[in-house]
Length: 278
Image 1 (tube, one colour):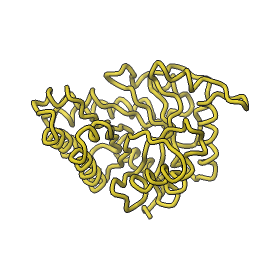
Image 2 (tube, one colour; image 1 turned 90 degrees about the vertical axis):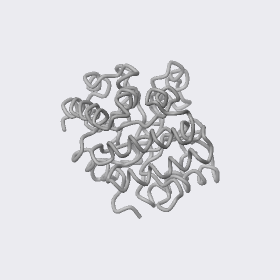
Image 3 (cartoon, helix red, strand yellow; image 1 turned 120 degrees about the horizontal axis):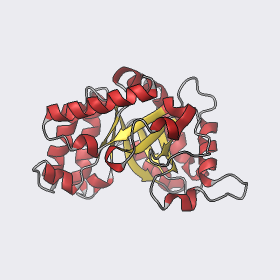
């Protein structure tokens, strides 16, 4: 088992290194911007360039699995190796795969990503609850056993999201509210930051949903997608201290120069420290 639960390790990492989460999103245009080919070799050069520059100074990284999967087994091998290198350097890794299924299939995803000796073992995984919150139970069980965490889609910033997330359940709350309630229950007995978090877009503006779930709130959409450090307090209110602000293109575009990547990450981290109270 990992030495401490994910929420405890996450709080310690953000207290030490700052709250910034760097998204590793190897878009084809970013590879081209770095002067790299859109091949497994280019993917590896890009990914390891980010890892080598930032692994020892940023608290959290969020590789987007799709941009590795598009290269097949060669891309997955890069993701696996990058995850190992990041964790060896003391960073936490959230693999952004948004897995969602039921029963033994969800258990299979959990074994791959959340079990301590899984082939893609990371610190936390993004998952989708839209087969019902109970469909996440196999992943919840493995996360609890191994000290890993989950980030569950709740209030995403894509225009189509509210069609489902703002719909009312048969019991009355919105779908997003039901997801947040489920997470709040999972974190109820936690001393400190819980290990079960929500994905809440940084560009959703103010919401009437209760974001105080006693767990982390992964906030993508910062930087190039329009979200700002200053806007986090408005979106998250009293829960802002638990925000994990994720930025990718704004930082990755500063490469391939290592000094440029470090400077961009430091600027973002300083801005988030001020707003989030670190």
